[in-house]
Image (cartoon, rainbow, N blue to C red; front, side):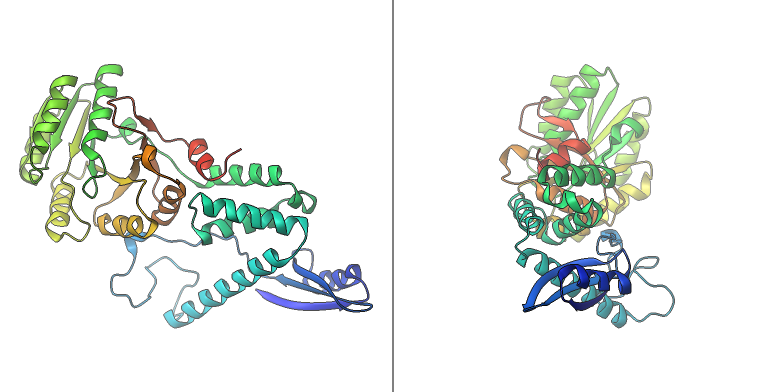
Length: 365
């Protein structure tokens, strides 16, 4: 991005100078009178601040050397990692400058920008993500619409619906394993889905569990299975799991419960890798709590990305204060949202995620 100050006897004349040098794509950052008969306009051009950055958490470097993953990043060839860091640093500084100039202005659009940014913050949306959404909107809508809050919100909702992704993993996959840290509600989520597909959709379902660590974990799933009327198997390792999957090859759907273990637990990570190795057909859904903080969610996604995560589920929405972290995690992990749960009732308190509901969490009408 190139930023430059232009002066003229009037704001209109200064803007003419901007367009003469930068063209129609110039972004006006600020205008002010610096002395009698002299006005200053600060404008920018070149870089698109709203262009998405390709972030794949599953390919993040563990070495901490800052080198981009193959096929990612803004440049190809022999461009040095240090140069990439400098370029990204410059872009961040320029973006912050633009945001600062916007927020300091006393114009109606600037005040609306600040109000919307504060609303995103109250809803838990990551600051950088919120700024990207807002800058994209203010740059793209007609200039006269930048003072219309309703129009801006509608535009942002439309664009977010285009960008985010949701999925129903049970509609196209026969075997789905639910993984994640302890206490997020994996077993209850599986019971809800088993009840819906067995009792309401009349599909043949089998439940498998590899949670032999938690006291009475298998018994809890057996109780659910007995109530729903579906078989439940307990596998102590990946080999037994593969055997049970073969045993229930006639089933329409096999749901697998796994032990809730910390993301840095190497033994558990090895078990997940073994599951994927012996049965590549398994699809993995990562279950997370909507009560968790952003940093914990990001680290959890990264820790469990040793297996190919296909989708995310967020639980306990009834206990959360804000829902922005759901969007933040989806964007960072680049994974679709499958389900959200809103209570303990089986099977009532679970929903198939929709784009409209997710966007409403962040930008209400």
